[in-house]
Image (cartoon, rainbow, N blue to C red):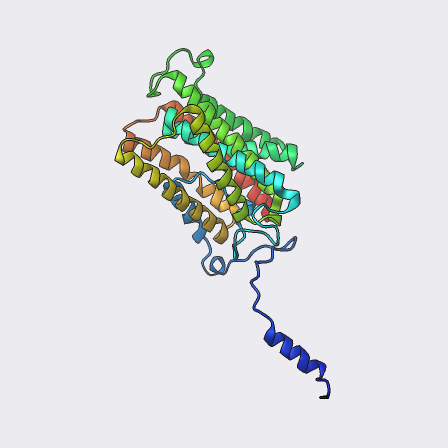
Length: 323
């Protein structure tokens, strides 16, 4: 009978026989922030990525859930594709609200002008502040109320309700009924997008953002299939060019998500949010260039109010967080 091996030899053999592990990136502990090497080497580069996000057709807003870099498959630590037990309801709501917001955005683009829909949808941060105050008990100051009022003034200038502006609807390009439908769709997009951001903030880093996108894609697909069957529009466009446009919408939308995710990885959320005000500028440029539709001065005035409100709120929060 051979003498037993020493504890050190047994430990060495155990290490050699152990199979290689496949680990997910550990979420940052409270108070720690993800540090990107590229951001440290090239400060300010992230400010160019949001412009590419809008050109590619993304309407995603930068938020804390996209700051982490993903290093593993689309599932949490032992939770599979359905997520942690205590977060599944929030994941379902995130998927439903996020996909519904995007559906309303596309409907707004069809029924009203590109600039009007984009400007109204850009009021999302205002609703986010309100919902964060209600559901997350975050601070809501008089400055926030002022910026909210300023954004609502901008929306009113774009909608131009007849009881305030009379029956003159010149310059809208389409009949007023369609304009109102598109306006409410854009407002619905802003509200649902704000709810989505609040839910993501509520979940925090306990859920990987890729799992959140997984719910968004799957529930959005189911929602689109149900709606298409309900309205009887389940068919491919007859024109080959329209089919190409559908493919481009998917590809450019994916590219936009990549750009905005990259932006918040290499730059702080404040500068990224400010750069996203270029959304409105590109909307005006594309509306004139591709549709030969000159925006009215009412739309320009409303855009200035909404952009000023959003930018002011972002700068104020950025300064507060920097102290």
